[in-house]
Image 1 (cartoon, rainbow, N blue to C red):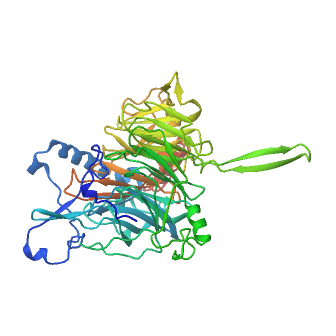
Image 2 (tube, rainbow, N blue to C red):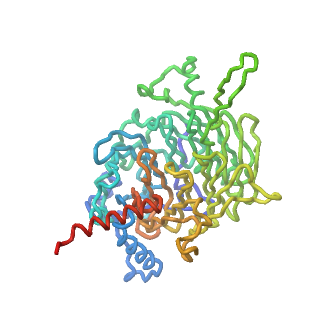
Image 3 (cartoon, rainbow, N blue to C red):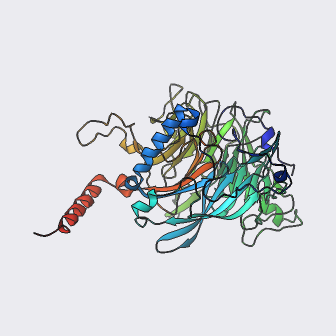
Length: 541
């Protein structure tokens, strides 16, 4: 495998936060130059210096502080549980991994995130290794955490609920992480190079991220892009298939590329590889310098492919055998064959690998700007979400994508004040989804609430249609978030705080109060019962 390009040498096309900023620690003492430098500072509580409005006169910072302080004051009311974890270095991606343990009051679960870093010494910049971090997270179960505990966190400290388990020294910054649904110990990563890297977490040794440390070796390298592929990445929910999208600057790669890890396993089984070394029970049977070419290369975008997503559902076709008068059930795996992509050409494209490498449907001008993200509903294969630099989220119905050649979304959700960076359907309710943006917020929407009136028959003048919860716990752009499929209504989100705080990021794990999303009548009945109970607990005459 060729050595990955240095992220410091790779120009970005535009000001999107993914990879656009680096944290720099300055070393001025000559004796510091001669000792080994760890990416983690020695102080225990204060991880970074926060610029204040009294010294900078920054009105934007004052507004951020005011918004954050207001949010923190209502945490005990809005949340069932919240954990705040300070990150020394910025992180561009966060993902839930496998469930490890279950107990009465909490579950232990794997968590994946990335770290970007560099250190400045006098007039030179030294890169502390970029890392893929594997953490073990204690996820507190619903209605266990006390309200006063979840609101009294130290913003500058690490959370006791998040403990680092293993570190992989990554060749280049980790722009995106995706876990393999069939085996969540297998993850794929994107960096500033043409290849996609596959990692077997349990097989990888733990490494220490110090200056000069050698890079970890991926268990499998997926080749096929002609030039850098930095952002778009997806794993198939039913088969070990991988999708990636190209980044045409400075090259010319605007392709969507599909791989099957099964092809690598078949190659090893056929004896073409002489040195298998994968972990026991792993789906990745690795070999030295193992690489895999694509199943297909799909052309249709005219600019950067920002995001890709597989169709998440499969179907069963009922075949009637008229001769024997019996029913036969034919399972068709559509998920591994159908997928979609979005890009900086403002297009949403649908593909079907069974019919070729050309688009089966192309929606021009799906948004009025670059389209950053896409997600396909796991509950209804007809619904697709897209998020854009035009600050909006669109929900499309694949049966009616356009009208007279013009993009025709079912609804356009508008409330974010900056470019949308991530969208994802909620696994716990078919009509709910989330979106995060550069405005430091994660919005939770319910499309079934669009058009519904309030109790008094009028819509709230201050609420966007469909918006029912707004997580405002971050101070800067929320670059990624992920719903937890093992713990209902639990979300992990991460922000890149370089612009508002002198380096680092913030990881938050949170679960809104169930009084917010449960049926209204059910909530009112519970509150009335509680009110009656409180009345009986008062002093008797």
